[in-house]
Structure formats: C-alpha cells, structure tokens
Image (cartoon, rainbow, N blue to C red; front, side):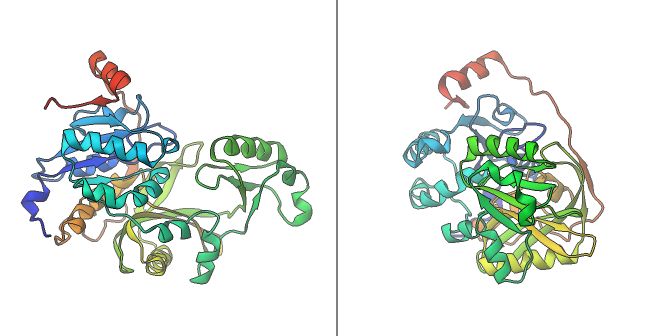
Length: 359
C-alpha cells in the first residue's frame, strides 16, 4: 500500500549499529543523521545497539529513544521477543539494520517482524550467502569480475612455509564473517590468525594483497537487478583497521560497471557497499560486498543522494525524491566527539536496556 510523502515524514524508524568507535564506527549514527536532516521530517528515530556505551543510544539530537538488543549469539527467539517489546512501546514503522552480523537473523524473522507492523528492505538468504567471503570468489568469477586469490585455512602452520606454495608476504588475513588485517611476516600472520579465529571461528581466509587504490560504492538494489543512487568514494586516510577516516566522492566508471554487474547478477534487494581495489594496471578486483549502508553514508547524502531516505520511499512506493547525480569532489573528514549522558539515562540503559520516551 502506498504511503504519501507527508506520512513518510511522520514515520517511526528504528536504526541499528549505534556504536561509534573511532577506529571502526558502525553506520547507524550516520544513517540517523541522514534521516533527521530531511526537511520537514517530524517522525521519530529509535536507536538500537548492543553495548551500553554505544553513543548513538544517547544522542538526543539524533535519536528519540535508545534500546539494547540481544547479541546474535542469544538466538533469533530472543531477538524477536526484544523487538516485540520495543514495538509495543515505540510503534516502529521501519527497521534499518546496519550491521552484517544481524542481517541473516532478520531475514529468517522477516515474516514475524512484518506481522508486528515493521517494514524492512533486505536481501534474500541466497543473495546474502552469495556475497559471503568464502563464496564471493566463485560468484564474482561467474559474472566476469576479478577477485584476489584466496584460500581457507584451519592451521597457523600455513604461514611458515606458504612461500613454497606461492603465497608471499604481505598477505591479507580475514575472518569468514568479519575482521581483517595485513601481515608482513609469519609472526604477524599467526597473531592475526589467532585473534580473528577467537572471535569469528574457522576457517580463516588468506588472501593475496592487491596493491593499488581502494574505491568503494554504496547504493540500493531494487530487487529486480537495478542499482539505484550509486555514490562512489576513494579513501584519503584510514584507521589502523583500514576504515575510512577521510574520503572523497569520485566518479569511477570501472567501479560503477562492476557494481551494476553484481547487483544484476544477485538481483540484490536493499542497501549495499561494494569494495574494490584498482591496481597499477587499471584492473579492478572485488574485495567485499557489505549487505548494509557503510559508515560513510552521510557523505552520500552530502553529495546529493540521501540513500537512507530513498530506502523509505522504496518501501512505501514513492518516487525517489532524494536522489540526484552525486557531486564528485565532496570530501569528508571524520572526527571524535564527546556525547554527554545523564547518570539517569546511563543507569536506565544499564539496568533496563533502554532510554525510552515516557508513554
């Protein structure tokens, strides 16, 4: 059923990923900022997080209330129960998930969440699995996109004689779901192996390093093979985790062409981020497809494409009013800022898992 533009601006929208570590921020705060700055928006934004110190849960200029969610390891029943509780209090219209680890559970619970009156724009489970790090190489090759050579391992002994098998340093060591680092010698590689395995389990993926420029793209897949609102960015400064600390919008025909192939090949539905490397020969290598908005999503809004708002318009069958050709050469520089929290709000989050508006 269509919802008119005026009604969309009165919606209650829940956004996850309210963490904001300087070296590896979640996208949720930036998504909330994109929504809050829409002219005429009078709805509510509900911040959802997993840690009592997630600052987006307390930023009253961005979120009207904040709630803790159970960690994915607690199971899908716990997540659904918590969402049901929050829904009874806040009457959420749309949920925008912003963290990779929660997407699969939300796909599994999509019908139950819809029954609560909450809309989401998500990929299918098959689409999600195709872009998993251990399957991405095969899928990309099928549609003619290069990826770095990669191998799964279950023992750190690999790193001591890998040169004999053609794997020379530096190497990229990655978790099967999340986290990665560059190792320049066996000692660094073994350290990364054990650290990542302790959090994300086996196997660990080893990838040959592609030297060159990293270029990223974010956009929306319409579920029919079309990429909407593409915005491209090149990193200008990174944290020690490789996350963008500064970046600039660009127009990169090779990146756009590859992203359009990926979205068409997957018939992707919902937000995504495509990460690629362009080597010194001008060849493009696909590194990752992330199934959500990136932490730099506010740059997309600032350059002309408010993708979080466009997501709401897609869900409510409205024309895409917040998408224009993005302005190349728009720069972002990230910074850290203190969020002031009252003791009462912090205690409420600690004790009850919520900073709620009185009902």
